[in-house]
Image 1 (tube, rainbow, N blue to C red):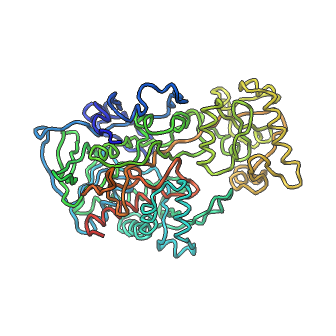
Image 2: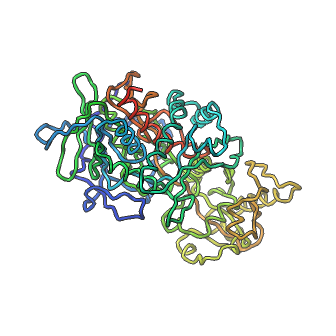
Image 3: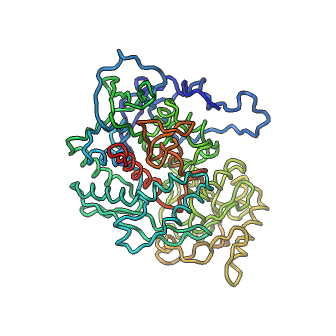
Amino acid sequence: MQVSRRGFFKGAALSGAAVAAAAVGVTTPGMAFANEEALATGSVENPYLKPFGDDVSYLPVRTVQEKPTFRNGVIAYEDRDIPADELQRVDACDFLVIGAGICGIVGALKAANEGAKVICVEKTSRGRCTWESMGGYGTQAQASSGNEVDPARFADAILRGSFFRALPEVVWSYINNSGEALDFVQEMLNASEYEIEMYNTTQPETGYDLVTIQAEHKFKITGPVEWKAHMTGMFPMAALTSVANAMDNLDLRLYTAGVQLVQDESGKVTGAIVKDESGYYQIDAAKGVLLATGGYHNNLEMMKAWLRPEDFATPYQEDAALGDTGDGHMMGLRVGANMDPIPHATMIFSGGYPDEESRRCPAKQIVRAVAPLVDQRGRRFCNEAHQKECVANALNTAHTYNGGAWFIFDQIVMDTIKEPLDDYFNNGTIAKGETLEDLAKALGIPADRLNDTIETWNSYFEQETPTDLAFRRDLVSVNPVVKAFTEGKVQSSALPVKQGPFYSMTCSSTFLTTVSGLIIDESCRVLDTNGEVIEGLYAGGNVSGGMYSDVYPRHLPSTSVGRAATFGFVAARHATKGE
């Protein structure tokens, strides 16, 4: 059914809204017009907000409230015809990139490297860099590591992760081009003043009937930097940005937001209207426009319209970058682009908490590793050691339908924690009971069921080979996280709950971003609702679609960042060389 793209969001222009961007560490981009309040205003005319009309009494609809950790960013897109007299000037280039995250910066660098005159606009102080690695196949780093990856097995794993809703041509474009793209990233890193080397990691077997693909690439940094595995892509992004700034034919414009696309009479995208602090102006792009605007995890109205309620209402929001508000999605829809079906896929992990204070709890590392999870009914509901996205989905379900989720552990585990926990008892992160009955009362869950659950859990450890008969959790393997945390005193991947007093710790999922978007072909050209190419328009990264469904497959690490870098490269190559 054809639905008008107009009226998606009104009154959400940069002129009337901006973010209050207190610096949250070095990974948080500062926002345009940081002295103003950020608003994201949903239009009542938005056809996506009420797909079933007003009469939904026959549907099992749940009304949910988003978590206070979610924040609205600046929505730059404007759904109005901007008159020519509001445009201060018209600039021209060969290739325009909207967004300077990893997709945008790689696309801009590739196009400029091919000799094109490039303008790249970014509405914040820097491109989003909240990532730690890239996934890819066929890189020089992979060849030197000795890891052998079967591309067909890699493609099958991605397709299975989407329950075969992914588009094979998009998946294969990522796999076939990621080697060349990631090698190009390394080439650009080598051109910077930073000493950063990409290397292919060797991951342990995933287990639980999920395949392990050795596609992850991390970064070694030489110099006065203490590198840790969990650190984000701030250093590679800084290096790539420095190379971009040094190129004469690449103009990187910060605090400049893409507002809407410009088309000629044939429907070809010929440029875009952008806005900075001085006002609106147009940029014409002879060879194409690349949308690299990311997801929309900082646009609550869009999340309410396009996600499962539990996928944004129950998690803790991890990503502090406020620039991802769905601008590219809306710009594409306005010119007739097709999009992944709703509900969209999310990148959610296990191990979230109700608020920022709970997130800092020093008990979380050991407790998450060894303890069972129960819901409001006092029952276990998942394999707690399964892949992060699997446990995250289970946690969302537990919070939505069964009132919450808690880890249950005993004094033996508590004795391994050296830091004081008084604040976490006071704020409700941790609860204590001299007996399981006392703990159940404190949590408001049935004591008899909690007793039965823990009794069953403990019985698994009394077998000759400890075996989880309910969810197949591995109870015997050495857990390196536990071993390191306890200095070798505890090594098991799970522990019984026997010695009182007894404790609970709250838990939810963690929300990073959305990973669904505009439908593209193998060259990253955006397609319309008839499957035809919208000439002049490209998309990559989390504004593009065709790769994921339901949830991001975390057991295939870094495919999101890998596809972003790859599709920025592919789009720029096609726009400049036709390849």
